Amino acid sequence: MEIHFNATELGCVEENDALICGAANTGSAEPYHYITIQGFADPEDEDGSGIHFEIDDQINGNYNLLASCSVSRSELRVELTRDVDWYPGLERVVVDCSAIPSEQVDEMIAGLQRLFHDRPADLHVARA
Image 1: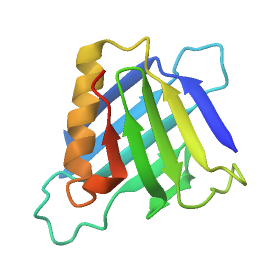
Image 2 (image 1 turned 30 degrees about the horizontal axis):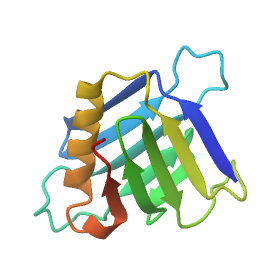
Image 3 (image 1 turned 135 degrees about the vertical axis):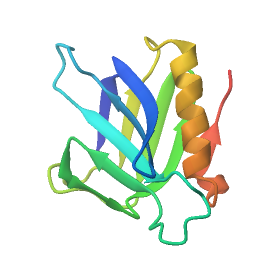
């Protein structure tokens, strides 16, 4: 199963030692969806538990849920290691970023590169 939505918001913020990247379709006529991908902002933090992924509610989030991530100027694709409570059978989430300004997509890419610093093979970035 795949969830697809068109992002109206996309970004990364650093707050309380966490780096949080996310996308949502706030204000859209489509059913509401959001995702967050987060981890410790300091790559040297030994207490870090890895990358946390969440979709639509805290109950649908956990560490070791995100298998890989592919990002380009037009799309963010997240492959999961397993499904989540609200979406049995969910394997991937695809976020259309084509309506988002390229500067915001570049910020997301930079944030994801920081989060995946110890898992570079699981982050695929297409610059075109």
